[in-house]
Length: 234
Image (cartoon, rainbow, N blue to C red; front, side, top):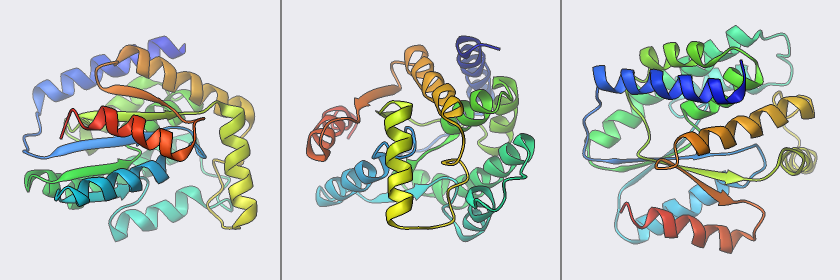
C-alpha cells in the first residue's frame, strides 16, 4: 500500500471513529510530531513554559510513556536490547501505552479544561508502524478506536527535518549521552525515509490540523513559528 493510500484510509477510519464516539472536553489537545532528533521535544517544553507564564494550566506528556505503567511499556519498546520485537507486538505495545496515557492523564486533564501537550500521539503509529513497518493504516485505525475512542488532537505541530539530518542528530545525541532507548534510531535510513514521506503525506491530507514547522531553523526561530500557530488556539 502506498503512502497516499495509508494516509487517506487512516483519515476515513478516524473520522468514522470520531463520529461514533466523540470525546467531549473543554480543554485543548496539542501534539508535537516529527522525526527523532527534530527538536520537537525542546519546542514542546518551550511552549509549555510560555503557556504557564500566561497563567494556563498545562499537562506535558510523551509517548510512549506518561503514567508509570506506560513508562514501563516504554522501556520495553525503546530498549535496543529488544531487537526481536515483531512489528505486530510493537504496535500493540504502543497502543497499550497510549491507552493508559489517555485514560489516566490526557482525558482527565482535558475534562478539567487544561491544555495537554503530547510529544507524539497516534500519528506516530500511523507513520512508524503503519508505513515504516508496513502494517497498514487499517491496523492503526482499528487499534486507535479501542485505545483512544475518538480522541484526536485539536492541533498537531510537525517539526520537520529530513530523514538524514534527523538520524544524524539522534545518533550524535545518543553518542554524547549514552542510553538504551535507541531501538528505533538503529533502524536503516530507508525505514526513516518511509516515515518522513508518510509524515508529509499526512500533513498534505490534513492541513487544517497538521501544521508543518521548519525544524532546520535555530531554536528561537522555531519557537516563534510554533507560537504564531498556537496563539490562534489559546
